[in-house]
Length: 223
Ligand code: GRF
Image (cartoon, rainbow, N blue to C red; front, side):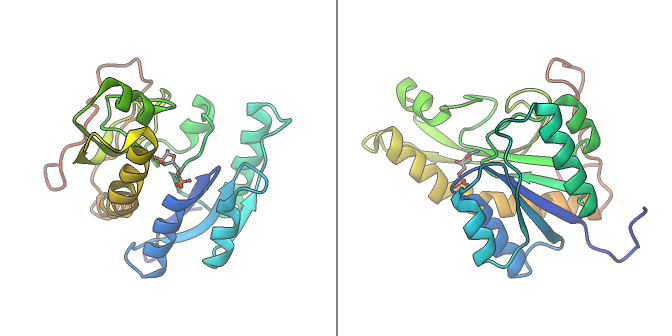
């Protein structure tokens, strides 16, 4: 059903664990800093702290555990839930599950994720440990559109910090989260919503193997 002209975009957060990025997003929505409706929080792990965090912040939350289900069966339930809540855009915040190409095609260019590295460097799991081991001098976080690859989609926004060198891998992960991610994700969502509002193009989100589509978006106003 087409959206009425003045209705705000409807978003859902998908997460699996601690939920600190989800909290920073919920706080920004609650403060009216994001011109959209956070209509649902979905968690795929029973008992994950994210569920309590969403309740505390007064947002509707559904637990949809994937355990025991095929990817297809789990995504069918997820799709039905998102459709029932008329969700148009997804914000992955520590969602520890790959989404199938079929699912991604339902939200082309409408799924964002945050990752604790300066993509395209260090994609995938254990990204901070890998950066620590590699001795990088600069790190950060990236908000990107989700495509069929692992952390390979077009980049929306990133922010860097210098590595001190004495923090260890766990300390570095905390610094990235606290000093970058919690502020970066709401800022990136604001940018995404501004693009939507201005009718700027969203990425085609091709398969990761398709080099023909630029992987970095033009800046706002560059049309
Ligand atoms: C964050 O560091 C994010 O970059 C990664 O997963 C972590 C989730 O943490 N994708 P939290 O659940 O938001 O606390």
